[in-house]
Every structure is written in structure tokens, then in C-alpha cells.
Length: 247
Image (cartoon, rainbow, N blue to C red; front, top):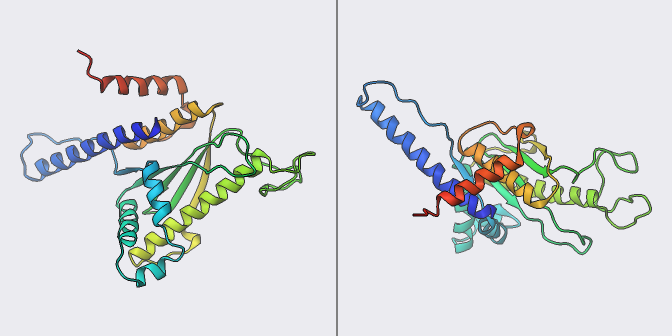
């Protein structure tokens, strides 16, 4: 569902950007009789599961070694991905963690928002999938932390394990993008954070992902305190139905 919605927003984003470019050219040529107000939008890369599959399959263990090596299809595809990421103001990536031997519950998809030009990353997570303190009094549980009498990894500790994996992927993306363009990069340049989405099920989290993407398409502030899942779900349904063109 989210892949289809992202694809629709991608088309809308392209139309808005082209409309703004047209109006800019008209203004430069002195054609309009009055000032033109640009449409609120920004260049957004809406990543889907195919994008993530290509990224995972093409990403090298050592990008420096890949750059020094000969031209290959894998290298061309990976560097095209890096260029696509850096060409956009906002990059929205839905991470779907793979099932692990330790996890018997349904994995929660997580939306990651990147701003590659300023090296910022935000992880949107479903409320309840993290805790602020552990049973041992620490602030960050590890993947095998003991929770009560349970010796297997808890949902919360597994969340942090998944979040760490996502963090590593984000750092690799930022680092390799900088290398591709010959720019200096170090970990201190990255500003990362998390935002909790107050929903209780996977379906509602998908609606929240769509809300975040919608905000960026029209360059609106993402305000999760005002997020209304029913309203946003109805907006999604209305958009889908409008594309069916019933006679």
C-alpha cells in the first residue's frame, strides 16, 4: 500500500516542481503582468522496496575499493543511487527489517527521513516500540538484555538492535555520498533523532508514513501532535478513488 502511495506522491511532486520551473521562467522572461507565487514543494525522493533491494544488493563493503576498481554494472547502479539521494532535499526510506531467529512477533516497518545536503536523519517509530530506561537502569538496552525473568531478547531490546542496523545503513549512505562527490565527512557532521508516532497497529503506522510523505510533498511541517489517523486515512482513500475516474 505504501509503495503505491509513494508512487502517486512522486508524480505529484514532479508536477509541482515542473510547474514552479515554468512559472520561474515566465517571471524571468517578463511574461506575467503580476508577481507569481511559487507552489509549496521541494524535491523529494520516495524510496520503495525495489529501491531498498537495489541498495542492499549493490552496496559494497568497501566503497573506496569499488571506486578504484573497474566499471561494472553493480558500480554504475550503486553510484546512480548515491546521485539520486544527493539530488533531493528530502529522502524518505521505508525500512522493512528482516525477520530474525530471535523474533517471533511481526516486524514493524520504520520510516527514515534523510536530508542529505545537511546530513540529518530522523527515524519515525511506532509508540511503544522503545523504552527510555532498561530493567538494569540504563538508557539503551542491548539486543540480549534480560527483561524480568525472560532471557531471550525483548521486543524493546530487539527494537534497538534494528535501530542500530538502520543507523549503520544511514551512516554508510552519508559517508559514501560524500566520497562520491569528493567531500569531507565525519560522524560528527550527522544530526540524528527519533520521532514517536502514536498509533497502535501496523496499518495505522502505514497511514502515518503516508502523512509524513504528504507533508514533505507540499513542504509542510511534520507535526505528529496534530496527526489524525482517521483524517489521513480518508485522505488516502479519496486520493485512490480520484484516480479511478468513475464515469
